[in-house]
Length: 213
Length: 213
DNA sequence: GATGCAACATACTACTCGGTATCTAGGGAC
DNA sequence: GTCCCTAGATACCGAGTAGTATGTTGCATC
Image 1 (cartoon, rainbow over the protein chains, first blue to last red):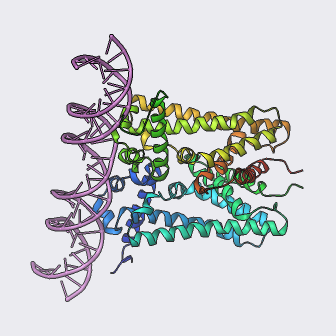
Image 2 (tube, each protein chain N blue to C red):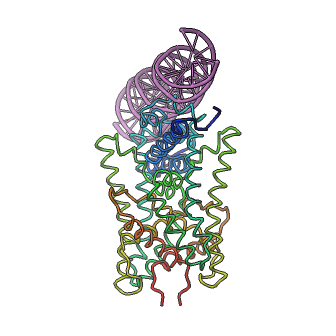
Image 3 (cartoon, helix red, strand yellow):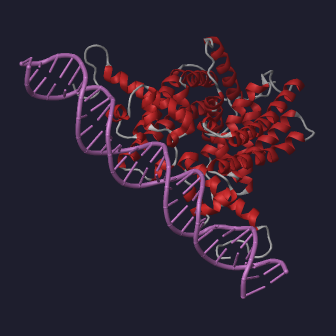
């Protein structure tokens, strides 16, 4: 069997890749890129560095993979509300709720991407890493663009104040992403409790744009 | 004296301390704590590691000093508006404007504290570092409390929606702190341009709390 | 003009960690 | 039962770096 494919008895290869990625996300969340050692990451799955290097070619490739996964999760979470046939206000509200619940449910990935790719990676990298970096940046931009577009829609429809959508998206995303920094997972938190929290944050960002009337 | 430094009777010692702190803030901003080497920091002021260790006892002490300075700057920036005898709405607006302008004017310090103290420092530290960490956390809380109190005031006066002030402060601070992540210094940016940007962000966070009427 | 101290510079040590090269268990295929 | 490939484990190296121990320079004071 060639690269990533399953064969009988489950999908061992894909599973191990995911195990490693999850462990890396947790480690990067807690300690950041530089302070995280691959020995620690492999310890967490009861394995050694050899396992990681079997699936990933370098530490930074693993880091980028965490970022990409986080971005894709985000896109998947907010897309449906963005595409819904509703008012801009309701679409934005739905995006913000979904975004916040995503942060809660996938905290390691979302906190890592909220921390950002550390900039020194930009400087001394080879060509392939530079390409991955560009890809991750493009994914980030794609997510941001969904918010920019819905803000524009709301301005044009008269639901929102007359703001510069690109600029307005910044504090809006800040409010949402910040959740990954202060939220502490509560064991046994109900789905309704999560949703209530998400609604309050969504109310805040939507109200920040709405016209007073 | 050989190196650039004191000439006559100024406060050479305090100046050098500030030089080092500024260089450290810039380095920590760009690369984070773990990836920043003290050799690099000292290079930036045309000096060597010996100079740093003359003024600071460890790398983490230097890191904490950057944090403390950032917190103190923040407190100093938002205090006046908090204390002003105005409506809660106007006080919060003033705080947010001052906060944002501070971020722009002291980006290295503010971005470092927005990144947060990396959590692995919490784990394996000695007693004195633990104490400094507690102090920095207290300063952070003090700043957040100013926002919480003004939100409460606004709720009680009926200017703001009936929100949980502690919870509402989170996305609000996220919107403000996020500026340190996306803002790129423009050489020759005018004071009015900065203020215009700050006003728009302040409008957003205030509107997020206000009652529609 | 010898002494003392402040303000560093220099040299060195101990240790961590990314990456690599090599080894190995185990399960199909024949 | 031999081959062989997958999925790692183990051992190792070299670079980078926090912290330290010691050297050095210039000014101030007597």
